[in-house]
Image (cartoon, rainbow, N blue to C red; front, top):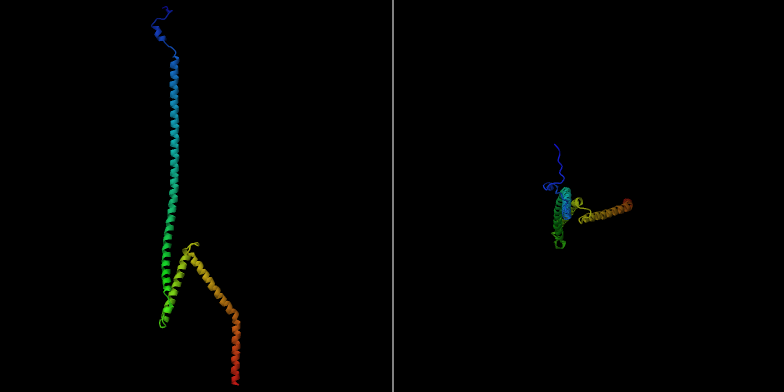
Length: 211
């Protein structure tokens, strides 16, 4: 069967060939639309980046919070134990110092009440013994307090002056005792010679009296 060729298309065939290029206005509209979509994508990307940085900062702060909380909780726990121990020791020392102060006050008032001028002749022995007993009791209490203070007082505390004062007093007493010993040692030969001469003189007197 022979093939027929048409030289000119029919009007019906023109509908399939109606492929026109977009106009300049349509092309500009498409470009603007694409640009707007691209800008929107950039804004969304920037927003996502900011959200990512915000979440990373929150995560970093949470890690810092957990590490700092654990560190300070441990340090404060140990410090609370030490501080409470110091508080207990301070309260105990405060009670001891208060008891020492009360005792010192009582002995001091007792010593202030001693007035030998008011004693009569008959009361003198009895009152003198009572006064000496009070002095000895005050001295004993002072020594006991010094022992407590020596154990528990820091070197720079005001109560440490009691120890310094007592040390100086002991040093003075020992120095005086040493001087007495030195004096006795120096004068002892003279005493011995004097006793010998006295014995010789007494012997001579007795011999003369016998003859």
